[in-house]
Amino acid sequence: MKKYVLKRLLILIPVLFGISIVAFILVRIMPGDAATAYLNAARIPPTSENIQMAMSNLGLDRPIAIQYLDWIGNVLRFDLGKSYLSKALVSEELVSGLKYTMVLTFASISWLFIISIPLGIYSAVHAGGKVDNFGRVLGFMGSSMPTFWLGFLLVQFFAIKIGILPVAGAEHWSNLILPSITLAFGYIPTYSRILRNSLLENMKSPSVIYARSRGISEKNIVFFHVLKNSLIPLITSLGMNFGGMLSGSVIVENVFSWPGLGRTIVGAISGRDYPMIQGYIILMAIIFILSNLLADIACASIDPRIRLEV
Image (tube, rainbow, N blue to C red; front, side, top):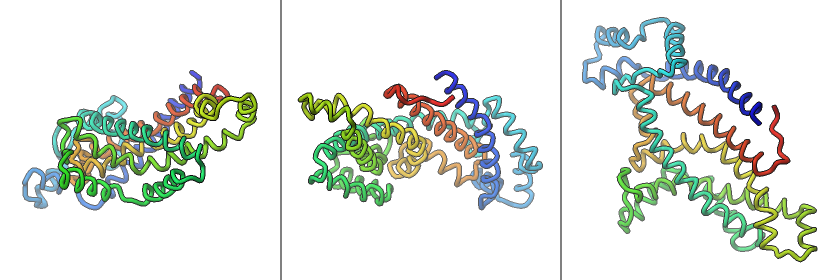
């Protein structure tokens, strides 16, 4: 296990190096000009002279290769630079936003497990029934409904029409309910179907047939013999989607004015804040890789038959 984890962490180095190159190039071929956006944010007329001065101050007048080497050298020293817009350290801005985004993501995961696991179990036990068919319809809705549209619907009903939940901010735990449900909704049907299909497959195994022959009740078979192994595809999928939920919170955070990374990166893109955008991409890449690693370890812990290749 230790060798496997070490190997995966070492693979992180060339992967992040490649991502850093792609991120550095992509932000510089984006439409717009960082120097002009910088001047506009400072309410300075974007004349040719001012643009040239801004490019010099931001270090954008140097060759691209030199800019990259300086930036990646600082990154290796855990220095992501300073934001063009706020003048604050990028690392501090990202950590500040990441705390709120993590809270939102874990709240969404809580909704996901609270709803998906019972729905998946019931659909498997009563395959072909009304709840199972409802889960299938819910799956189509969840995969086809735009997140922002669902967010606006929830705001219209729960915040405006009924008035029982707040619509924006992060001052109280109740502010978390609507955005977390919005973020989780697209995943709940998928995860319930994954669990349902995994349960049905595992219930055909010889061990289950033997348990039935011994007179063990169907309820005990599901919860004590089948459910544990059936959760493995769910955990694997969660490891693959955890980073997607973090990055996908961009829309939800802007709809509900949640002060997370989503709002930070949208402002950075609008202002062509290169250090902030590059730092965000690196951070998301690390989270994606680590979440997949943790999912692999969790699956191996649940089922010892899974051998992690060294």
